Length: 145
Image 1 (cartoon, rainbow, N blue to C red):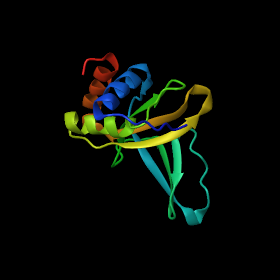
Image 2 (tube, one colour):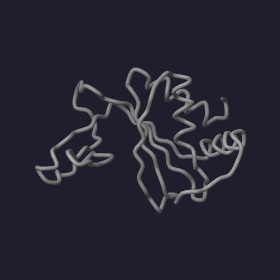
Image 3 (cartoon, rainbow, N blue to C red):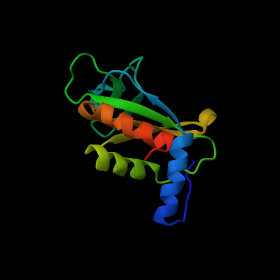
Image 4 (tube, rainbow, N blue to C red):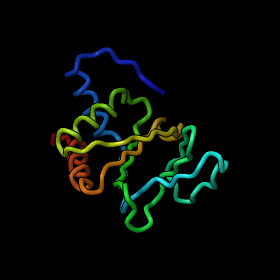
């Protein structure tokens, strides 16, 4: 599920550039937002279009399509990695690249699908940089960066 790699920064860069070119990426249309509900209310019904549900000590939070103009709405993409790919360090590497090229921070929510290579990631970013983030990911996937 997770790899341990001992390599130089240059070796990591080279490896992760191969990983992103081999990854399956889905770019989501529209905007997404977090719908929160209090833990004290019990587990909420899962929204039929929820992409993720997570909780802390106070709230359940579901990542769902935004209904209209919702404050904090985000753009989304998803990565699935090939089975056996060493993607260790991928989140930090790509998040740093996106920050350097677009100025944007990101959030990542991970899941597990054993039938599709294992770990997969949802990446969220502000709507105002959605086109720029997608363009950067596409360049990396084509080996243009």
